Image 1 (tube, rainbow, N blue to C red):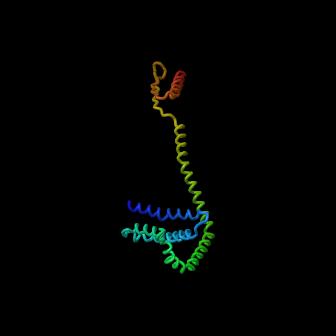
Image 2: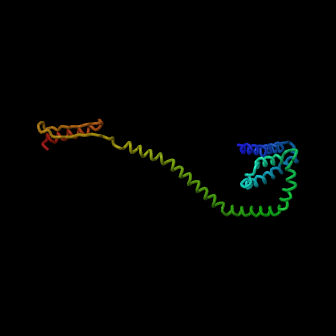
Length: 211
């Protein structure tokens, strides 16, 4: 719980408050250039600190009061009485970066050139491949959404075309005395009466005619 509170305070005092101060300076009719320079230096130091923090947290975050010390350092950077940003930037960061500025620019230009070559060579192929994958994904999703509906319609058509079940039991026997047939039937569905009656009449007609 304490670590969550400290993280929230660090975000508030290390990012939100400085960003608001920068906003006020930028939106002034006549911005204070010295204040803007100060806050630009602050963001440079904070960017370096955040980059180092990604690695340092894995090794030194177990130290006692680590989060508290980080919060105190961030406040030290912008607090009006200390103005630690000006001191750290002028004493450590500026001389270090200036000594490697030419080499850094050279490496950056090489990386930009290589990235441009790679993008021009493989960019169209990668774009076509991504478009093909996206189209296949949409087609697959469409087929999956259509399958339940087709199965449901097929089942409903089969159910409608299937004959109604019947437990009709009919027995036609010859009655030697009357010359007519006796039908012993048990019907559960009225629609099955007509075929049985037709069979009964046809059988009697054949007997009467001597077939």
